[in-house]
Length: 356
Ligand code: ADP
Ligand code: DP6
Ligand code: CO
Image 1 (tube, rainbow, N blue to C red):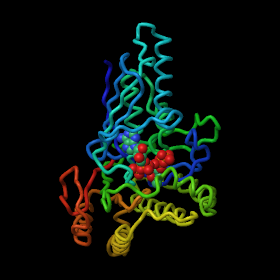
Image 2 (image 1 turned 90 degrees about the vertical axis):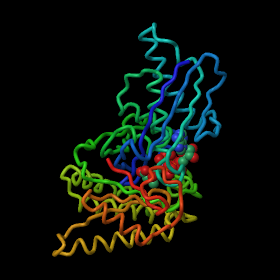
Image 3 (image 1 turned 45 degrees about the vertical axis):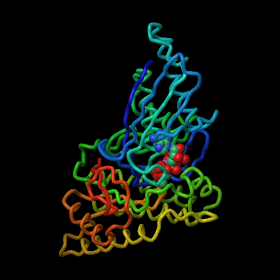
Image 4 (image 1 turned 180 degrees about the horizontal axis):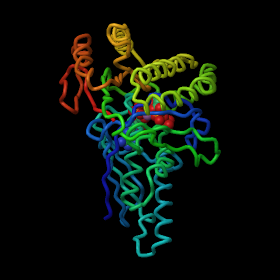
């Protein structure tokens, strides 16, 4: 029995990926940029095993077996990783022929699955990384990101730490559609992420089907792709390199809001945020309005962003985190009880993860 266990953290996008130009290879309609959170908080842990006695590839997610559909994303990722192992064995015939064995894969998320907290990102990144470890592949993270991308687009960014861009690329092969690090986690350790779990239930519309519907029906998406995202990618990269939190926050919030506007522009419309999500926006906007007053320094102190779900992620410099937590807990006491994996804030409905 050959076995390997690996973890991968979630990443939360500041410039959102939403839309595919190729649904099979998972090639996006626009580039995106995210922050990879640290491994100690929201993460997927995946164990892969290869054994000559196994009779088919099998996968368990959070203890429940999931079907691996013949030409689905999971099957594609496994096949791609087996191909890399085969190439390695062709170069070194003493290496065991692991690609000819079936695999059993077990993965656990320590946070809500399919609730808009990027479980598909950490999940497919951990899957790719664990097969890379099992097969002892020398592949660089950017090369592996090409394979994780074919499991879930956002997963390509979780293979790198810190501030990460996923370049949309232009090739039909997808070979230039991979993740690159804009800056390592050590570049700007002062930025923290606060995860506010508004609801831990599975979303009604998966990211995959939601974005497909948007591509088919939203005129606003076309404007976003052509006229908004390219400039924002440049501007936010510059803000990160300059450690300019005010600008980073301005762009991050604008992009979250445009992403949700695009969801609303979809037919039928998709609503990922709920009343609590919108109330958190109002609190942060007010907090920033006060921060922007000249006598208070004239700068934004926090940035909210929402993926395809109601849960908020708040980015902020370390100096403001305590204040933001007490503000959120004050306005949203006992919003909902949930299983807080970190035990930080009990049932307050808020939990924190440091980032990057
Ligand atoms: P999220 O907002 O959590 O990323 P998505 O709709 O994008 O939600 O994707 C959720 C799907 O991702 C799950 O239904 C499952 O198929 C897949 N997924 C989540 N976690 C894992 C994991 N650890 N390993 C493999 N696949 C996973
Ligand atoms: C709103 O990567 O989950 O979180 O590629 O179909 O698996 P698939 O979709 P997924 O979409 C993520 C959308 C988002 C924005 C982002 O992470 O960039
Ligand atoms: Co996802």
